[in-house]
Image (cartoon, rainbow, N blue to C red; front, side):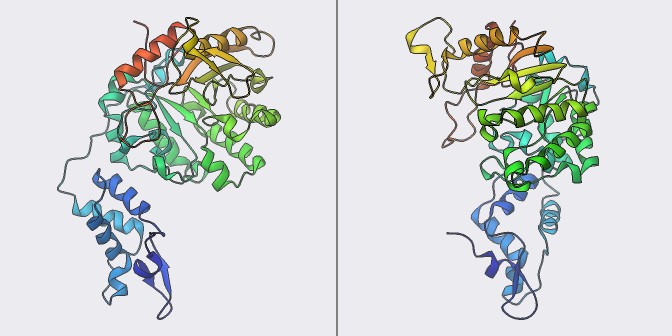
Length: 387
């Protein structure tokens, strides 16, 4: 049952019976701030305390304690000031020194709900939270590249919260620079699906403006860039002109930067996406979490797309097939192409998660190495390398 914030957690305005909510209609915003500041999930009692601070006291005749979500954040930070010390700033390095052609990323790791898909949350983290993420062993040890999504909307399942890069340009550059100082190379994801559908209301002209301006904003602070994850979810094969326009807008803003395309599981990257784009382009392939690596013509490894247009012998066969196909167009439709794997594995974030099968990071790296042997230049999913 939804919490009645309009009645219980609001500010009393303009006489009896008129209330303005300061924390929405659910508890997700309270939980998000609590997790950001305290580092754990709040109990029901702690959520109740937050509701009291945010207006319940006024409703029952007392003085209001916190008149905004930011004042509630400050209250929490003050209350827990005696807790664990925040992570220190990372020592300054130069993340841009890392070769993107050998990128090692752990985009889906570590297996912790707090940091799940960090790329879609980093722009709403405070300095301490960002430092804590960069200090995690899985990031320090297994990654030299870190994915950052610049423009986001709202997706509660991964904690994604709204952020507009073009309204916060100095902060965006500061976050990218902090990653570089931690000796990690940023990978720029320019927008999430939610940003396009919720914030831009599917206005494609507006999206092209955001893509070009955001690309210009971070072009000198990343090693390569991607328009969004699973591009075909927003623009399927019926929107080939629009897909190509996205990459041309990116290239206009970043003439020398490598540009990557991330697609749905077992969906090859269309050559037409890169037509007349020029420079380095990357197929950032997704093999699907449950697809066997295969690659040895075993019947149990055969994977066929729903429309039966393409068949692949497991994940390895899919990786190899995309490389063979793209190689045919190098020098004609595309200038330079790199075949890579952007997503192939998934950690155990929490027991009831819908994303399966979960894998430990070591198991994911074994899977990644198999894909590297079959034509992927680098692994942005689990940081695998060929030893």
